[in-house]
Image (cartoon, rainbow, N blue to C red; front, side, top):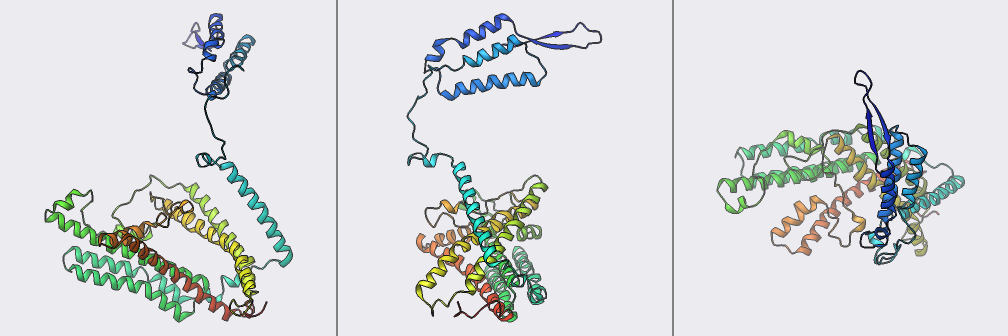
Length: 457
């Protein structure tokens, strides 16, 4: 529609009033344009049927915007707007214009968005599990007890607390070693030996404390988690500084091969960068990281609320489902094999839910909260492992940077390098499970009534 604005500036003092009118000639021109049969019948001028719908929406939005701006349209103008929409799309326009597949066909299923089906699955999953939760509560009652998670021993477990507070001594020692290496006070073999001693002590010292103290559940797992993170960070810190020192020496000697690579050859040992690296949600050390502009406080609060909710859901599943199944199960090597398989299959579903909640709480919620508070820019803490076609795709950046690629550079075959990377990953997962096993032994000794004899049903 052609709309003309006329200004009436006859008032004194420069005040103007705006009125909107549409001339008869403009209205007739608009109707003639809408009624042109060639523009409608010619399929080459119109690419898609959606363009006509877009034109209708644009006309409607134009009329709505005029009403919102306080510009009144008379009855004749409203009638003209209706005619304009009426002639915008005729029944003679072809509805089928090109070859298309059904959305759920095998050729197009992965090219469509399935957000609606995903939401439907979530609704069904919530409904089914809500019924099971209500049925479990009606049958067994509330089984959650704080003694499994917190007790007088866990609150007074000072050896593990002191061990956790002394873990920063190992990064400080690594910093002193690198500072001496920067000043050429230590040779490279000595630096490597000192870093091996520091990293080994950082992982064995907490294990020794846990074995001597028979730690509580949360205390032992938390300490081993921190110890593993410190070990991984120290290895990355030593390895990266060793490589930067080698690049800096090559650049000083005028090595052409090192200058051709697009790598920062500057070697600077900064205590500030080490402190930021130790608290940042990353295991790969570098002198600088991409940073965000500011901290979104409201976003952080929402993520904290989600973290509390999903942590509670995880604890509820463990106490209400997993622990009763384990307590009432026979020993797998002394009972019926089919019964043992049935118990394992019954544990598989709640274990899957706990694993998913743990992954979401730690790798998504907690690491994103920490990154937001520290303005850490790179938020790719995990890859889409649920879409991985091979075991090579979801490998962590630390494994690729400090295990996989160094093995390839030293001439190790690709398959052997991949096996070494996954072996290192398995060792650290088993160390955490070992802490869980020690905690389970302590729980059986402290709460014998809650853990029945393995042979009882």
